[in-house]
Image 1 (cartoon, rainbow, N blue to C red):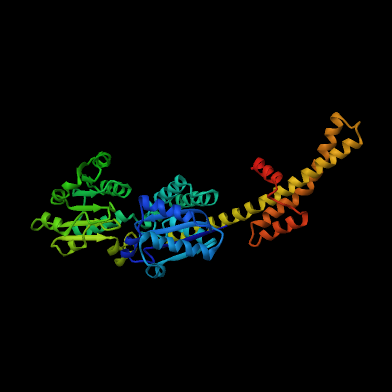
Image 2: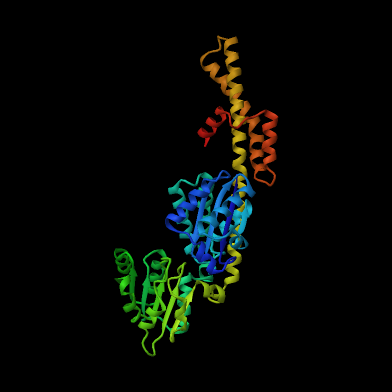
Length: 435
């Protein structure tokens, strides 16, 4: 089996298309289960964020799996394959592992180095575990990806090379409004992105924060955590009239904040900054035509390349350091994988040797019945020690050689020379005990 990635992101697709392929909730779970149900797929995961949708799968056939996953993405998103395919990327085996680790470190994010992707990967893994679509292969791979991402943030300055999307958005707000400390902010939504937005506002010195959400209790909990207050969605127009900054990130599927709402809330001579981090959009793009209103959304950030313009100190060095970490971790993962593949062969060899020792000891005892007690045990231990010493060097060497490119050939030669079957019940049972 091999790792396959099929996906699209802000690097390959316009935001308008990402908006259409965005999947969440029950639709995301259904896509996940349908991918896992394909005959070519043994395990599946889907990472779906505001700027990427990626399907990860452990597959036994490359072309068949790519076709099946592409078909499912198009079907679930209601998009013709002709529209979708030009924006897809496909990574396989080593490249797929490298891609995942790069994503986990924030190297592939719209804002390089942002840490939110780690939480999104963790959520994707939890969903796949809950739905039963992952096994040992993807579970171990994604656990390692999370460790690699944490290492990148702990060992390098990648955190300072780029802020989160919220941080970038607030930097742009300061360009328009001046210092935002002391300003009034409205956050629409109470999910993880909204919580991040509220926390970032607090760190920026904004103390007057209002949380609006469809589920009022969730708005209350988030508001209490940042010392703000909660309102219902019906109160948004009145709150916009008092706000300097509005951050919306619900992904409700329709515009919650229309140009009519904003126009009605604008007073003469005041400025309003809106940051729309939702896919699909929460804010009607038509608000840009209103005097005093600035709207920044994912599409405008993508087009302007603001992620590359902000916080550039040491950026190149930090990225290079993280790239080195990714290269090291990919090599370690592949080496461990190759070594693991030879383990069943080594266990089968030792199992066969144990069978031979037991058989020969049985013959010896039947031919020399007076060989009893301590003397018989000593003979058995001596024979086993001889066999262990004979097998030690070749098994150590085959494990070492298996971790090098083409190392599978050594295990294959061992199986051929000793007529080994790693799937025999005796070998499998022994491997379970030794592991």
